[in-house]
Length: 377
Image (cartoon, rainbow, N blue to C red; front, side, top):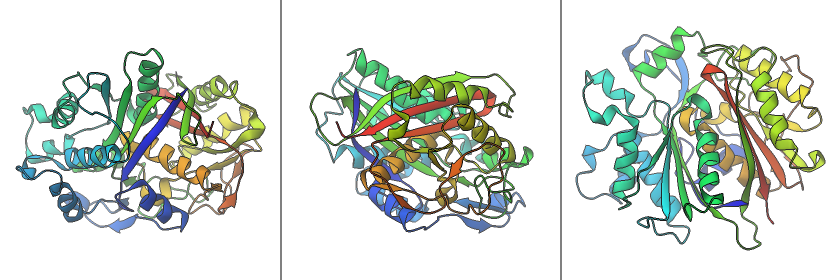
């Protein structure tokens, strides 16, 4: 089994995992309304990391020419640095591997008319990160739409299980740009108001910025760290952007992992819950088909938005913090059920003494993933 020995979140709600979790638990949200965002004329509700706060925090770790790094790079580097300070790990070791999850990387450089710079390539960002920490291994890039973060955790866990490495540093990061806002606008997926996951009045998603890191190793002793039990990746190849109407890929990903747990010990399912009509409906059907009707379901998107390549890692960390706190978090913004699947939406923070949770996530191109986590031995 694989354990998470340290983690960090850089988000609009805080620059540590604990800060972000406590803000979520209190019902705070980083989502605000913006008009004419990126001079596109588009009005949206979104969640942004404060640039000045990020620069100030990053400068503490990088005194030599911090201006050369992009916002994506600064947030990722800061997240890794903060996570590594809370555990014993040699980031330079050839037995330590870096994994980067991102959907767009430095795509914002296109907004400045830069189209022939290696800095646009996600592999370049990954190599910059590993080099920053003096690691000479070739980093692994996972860019598989919105499931990238969970895919990266699964990939790193397999390498650890096969003893190819001793430690894995898994980081997810994405920042918003004109390119990203325009793309989701073309899909008519954005909401000008705060999103309402699974609610009958939902009209679309909110985007957000984040970087998040988990440091993984093989579990060798009994402790209370979060354990990654298993994961599954399924693709239903339904549509370039739309999910399966019957939840096929998500259902199969769920079925793959629940074979490894007593359903009665699952505290909650942290769903993708983007607040789009198709995603929430599909997930409700998949959860219903998997006979998980009595397990509470929540979404965290209304606290800090859809953070793209960081989403799977951010939301797994927050869910882990909640379970260690014996808490099932509410779905902020949810009032009245607006999906056909027979599922149990968490609409208020509640107590639990159960030890497992499921992270469920989906993305463009029909990709779906699930992960089962356990608190303690």
